[in-house]
Amino acid sequence: MIVPDAVRRRPDHLVDGVEEWTLDTDDPDVRGVSVLLPQRGWPWMVTVAAAEFVRSEPLESQLRQRIHAALTAVDGVTQVDEEDREVWAVEGKPDGEALVHAVAAVLDELTPAIRAHVTDS
View 1: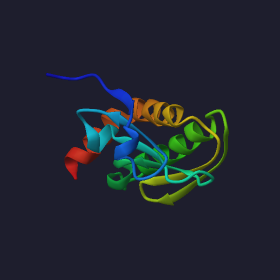
View 2: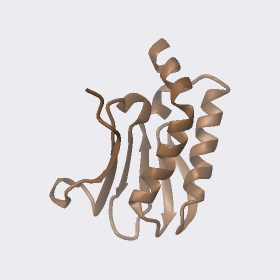
View 3: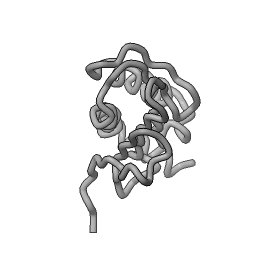
View 4: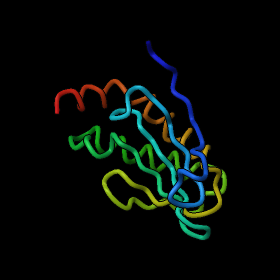
């Protein structure tokens, strides 16, 4: 049975930080997103599972550029930096749920290409 994706806030007692949001999906390697605010005053950490696996052009550049643009467009975001292959640091005071939705929209557009890449890897 296919379960529709859902954005959920993790219960506070399960979070290693202040707040965490996730995209619950049945395709986590392709569509997995989590957003963590580790401490107040620190940047949000946005983790995108597919970014770990996508390493061929032009898909890698498209994915990274679109994620950066989507995160930058979220209300309250003042700066976005790529911290690691699959992690972006987001400064400002954005809503965690909005960050997940922004990245999920990018992944929705690129899912067929990402899935083909992940399946071939």
